[in-house]
Image (cartoon, rainbow, N blue to C red; front, side, top):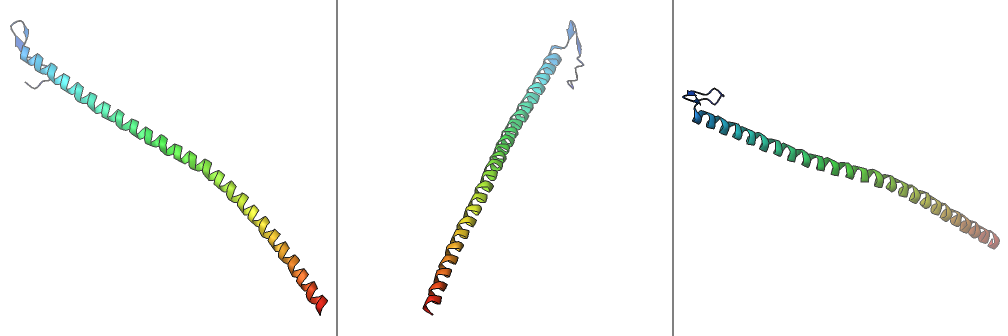
Amino acid sequence: MENTGNFRKALLGFNRSDVMEYIAMLHNEYYAYRQESEKEIYDLRIKIAELEEKASEEEQEAVFGAEHEEILADLQSTGADKMSQAADRLEGILCEIEELLNNKG
């Protein structure tokens, strides 16, 4: 029998072995489909978790990137201010040295 649902006729209905074989075939197909579906669901859940983790990392990078840029800008402006102060001090020292040289000469 091909298990197509067409059963041989018996005295009081259908051939019992044909029906049992067909039911077993349907049962096996159902469980194979169920296992395949559960595997696909599992794979999709893993993919979702990976994407959520990646999105979280990108979000953190965006937040930390903005903070990093702000800190760099502060450091650059602070560094520029300190360099400006140092340049002013050097100019003052140069002026004092020139005055001393001019007074001696």
